[in-house]
Image (cartoon, rainbow, N blue to C red; front, side, top):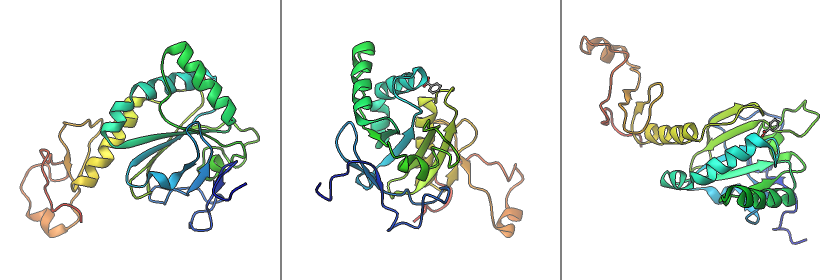
Length: 231
Ligand code: BEZ
């Protein structure tokens, strides 16, 4: 086997401070891996420069997962508009993934337009916390990792197998992360693109005390940069 070609998933832990034994946190670099997928060999590092949703599903050919994959595939343009790629992973074999992609096309008329990685050894699932260390079966949770263009984990969501994720919420969270990166502002509850954003919390007592008489801890930023943009 040529060295570059992965048969099973391999984590590149040697060059990373993260080891599979340590839970991943927001702000951690996403551990790299090389694995087979329905669209050829994938290296996580190939996604540098783009946002990436890396998400696990409990199993191919299951109802909730199928609904998610149909909805995600139909939303490809909305993710592309955010320069955000999709990458699915489960413990099912590549051949199961391929058969499921075909069944989805035949049954729903929808082509799954993102790669599905096989993780039969569970090395990716365990490293990313998609499969609890103590689990004695391979059914992953519905974990979604929001990875920024520099390879940093910026958000993690975790749903049970029985409840499907919301594609709208995935898109909303990517858009919110992009907005707070672009300006020194924060996004309020339920924020959607086009809504007002808030000024970042004040951290300087003198500035705070000298500020006007409105609600100093909750100020609409009116969609403008209110402080110098982050370098
Ligand atoms: C589902 O995708 O429908 C599913 C998968 C595993 C357990 C329960 C539901």
